[in-house]
Image (cartoon, rainbow, N blue to C red; front, side, top):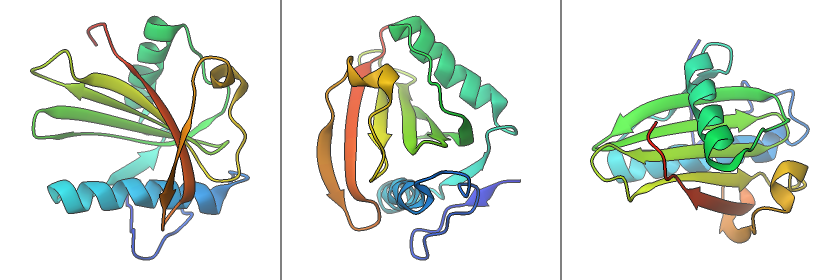
Amino acid sequence: MSYVVDFTNVSTIGLESSPVAPALAGLRANEARYFKNKYGHDFTVESAGEAKETVEWVHRILREERDLVISSRPLEATLFQVENVKWAYVFYENGLSINALYTLDDAKKRAVGFKLADGMEVPAELASRFKFVRQKSKLAGTIRGSYFVIKGEY
């Protein structure tokens, strides 16, 4: 069942099993606010079980680009297109959010982004490979983020 993320009344729906559920919900709401304000798009997620193809697509990019496997369980995911960009998000139980930005007409503007919910440790599989910068968010507290450029075709 899909859920339109409300960034006015932040809810932990679908994220309850996360030890940082309120912070992860704030992170998810922060993304929802961005897409609503910039593109007029309603950020809608579904359980990872219902979004298997999206989760597998993101995991394939991680595996093939960086030989990276995420150890945490995916809770929710979404896949949508805004203008010429295909976006995928996966939200994990440990508080990690991964997004894939995949432009359809410009191979130079493709990337995978990592965001860490406030209060979580950097996952071991990412700690030695990426440096994380901090940003403040009214909805999510302190977000730590990093990214890498996608070189292949997916």
